Image (cartoon, rainbow, N blue to C red; front, side, top):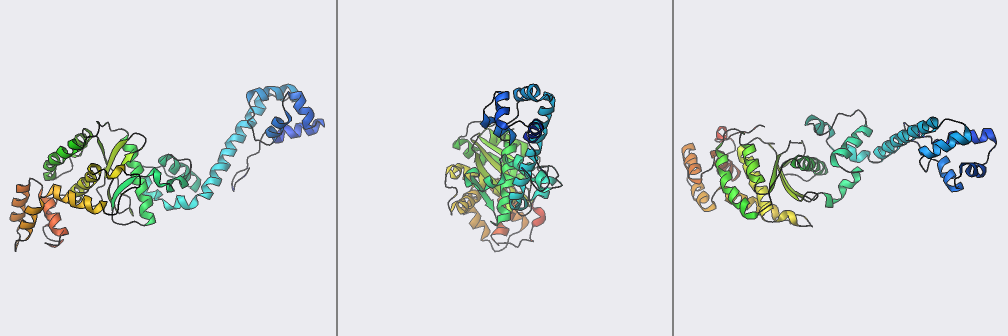
Length: 349
């Protein structure tokens, strides 16, 4: 077998040379080796492995040391692996190029690679698949995802982040999932929205783990248009929620977290067919209402003019951070995106 860069020559070629030197037919050789003619044919063509027992027989029949044959077999298998790896990488070059490999290197998901073969191997190991074409099987990725785009590039980047979250979640021990625990946790989480820094993450990670959810902070991959994602790891049956700090804004972080937790509570992750078309809008609405009372918000937002003092007082009444109120007002275009932005907390890991 061969590829662009390698050729794998089985030990059988050297055996043939020995037979030619002796004017010995394969039939006679099989008889002297106490092996079937079919097995000898497969041995000569590299279709079966040259075992230690066969190497010992070759030493007795041909007078060539067993270690020589064992070495040839080892070299052949190594070269065969290189041939197969390069041919598979060549076949899946479009898959390799569709992933943001350099961005993955920057956040330490994969090692640097100077050629497409090494990239292919590293990507397969990262995704835990025998070949990258398997990643087109939607059964592998039952993901509910809040994203702003759905291009092919975005989908590949989403798979990268989902796999990262899956791998990170393995080290997080969680209790059995119970919906009523999540319900109580959503109330408790509000106190953390008042924090100006990101020091609280381990605390909310522990809180959600007790509810049966593994919360993972995932890196931002350019082109993913991803704020957060949630899915069930089919191997461990663990519920995983991943959140990015893509925009760094506190209001975006908290809305995304609540959005993903709504997917969990509403049972969206358990559907074999994936998300329904309106699941994202449902999660948006429910998450928004959890964070800010809808009726109180509309009464407040309809005021003719809002000052930062008014916003702070409303945030205090809702027992949430001011960042969430400002973000909501900006999103609803009650105020401009440039208004009161300096009062929005920013997070960094």
